[in-house]
Image (cartoon, rainbow over all chains, first blue to last red):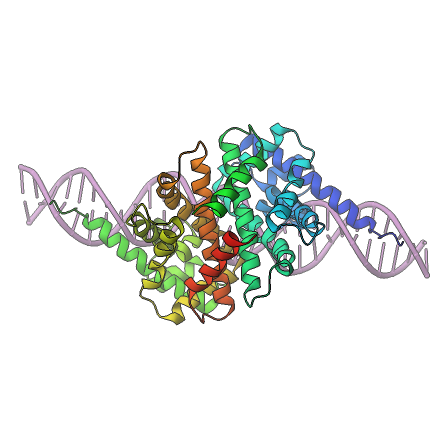
Length: 196
Length: 196
DNA sequence: ACACGTTGATGCACTCCGTGCAACTCCCTA
DNA sequence: TAGGGAGTTGCACGGAGTGCATCAACGTGT
């Protein structure tokens, strides 16, 4: 079985990216997103401002790059669920990867709070939503019964599930990071699906 | 019954705001959002750049201000639905105001397309989502059965409904503005609620 | 009629984000 | 050792957004 070759360049790039994002998050958490300039992040990381923009599309990307990776994890997990499993069960299982990510509860709360309490970043959550939706919907679609609107249906389901997760995250932050995120997620899903 | 007094200042301000937003939308539709500077909008409207920022928080606001008003219309319509009506029926009825807004099908498609095909504005949709959710959720909450997580449930329901509307809008744009938006919305809602 | 305060419009200068371009460094290879 | 590719950096520029001071318009009181 042929090993997949990962170019050395790509690896170092990924490492640097991750490192830059980490230092950026620390600064954002400490000083606030709006009160931190890209220049400061660059200085703290020991690179030039220009180089930062070689790694990230924009300032927002610095704070949100982690979310893209999470999206890919979720999609990957979803893809390996059995095709005859209940759709929502598969989605829940896919979201479960979020709790497997190694991260202290503290820093998880810190990051999540950062994403929610800043107006400039709320939209980032939207971007996340759009991207996750783009990843999940194509995987959901083949599971739906034939219809000339399966695409719309798949997108709606993906979007609704992500939305529930988002609502759960907000609540989770609101109550100070206590309790189980997936438990809140279940509550949200039940609310939209089972309610008269 | 005392007439509610609307200060003359507020009225003129609202009129000017609307006028500015209109000319901005025309320019955006003609040249594209990213290829249009705030300066150009100001010039086309016959005011200074600085004045534009007195009326709108930012460039995005120019394109999205209409959505806030729509949100208020929707919330108002929802509020006047009978409390014992099915929740999702009330939501559907509330969204129905969108089709009552006087607007040619062409310009409606033009505006909606503008909102979707530009990356910078996708987030605006998120802002819209957040705002509409903020308006609707408090109205939904008292309709839910007692629970210590009614707030979360209400927010999830509001968010899901808006998300369905958004998915429907995307599809509506994709198929070129043909057909009934609410019909697509119904399909989306059915997909997330009735599916196994 | 004149002075006054209030309100909004405007110009100016500034910070910050984001990008195109060109020079430079480092490493790998022929 | 010369050359080429890839990444880093500085520089300059355009555009968004903001704070501040000024100016014009308008109504009001004397």
